[in-house]
Length: 128
Image 1 (cartoon, rainbow, N blue to C red):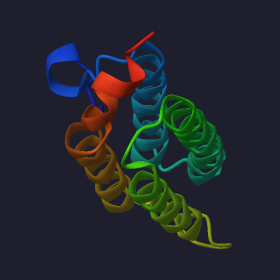
Image 2: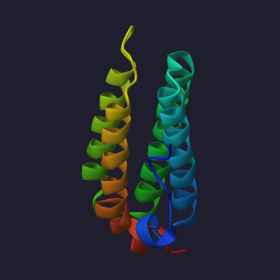
Image 3: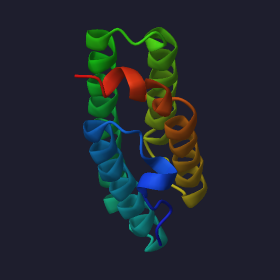
């Protein structure tokens, strides 16, 4: 079952690299959720690890571009990213079961982040 469906209207930032990476994150969330729905915790944990690794790389990519192009809200954005990664790492605690609720909470945070925070960098990051 898909938790997330990326559409340009709902989640587009106007920054190609970010939108493409967001699509990949949506796919990883959905694949992890599918594994949880099938009660395959080994696969869910493996996909969750992949998701966290990818999100971390994505956040670094965004932050690098924000720094390079002089985005005003960089420090606040970095703090938001760091908190989310820390929260996700808690999901990986040894012996912990990955649940649909936790994935839904993470998906909700991520979509709100795109809409309320990532879209703020469009005018800065889309300049070239």
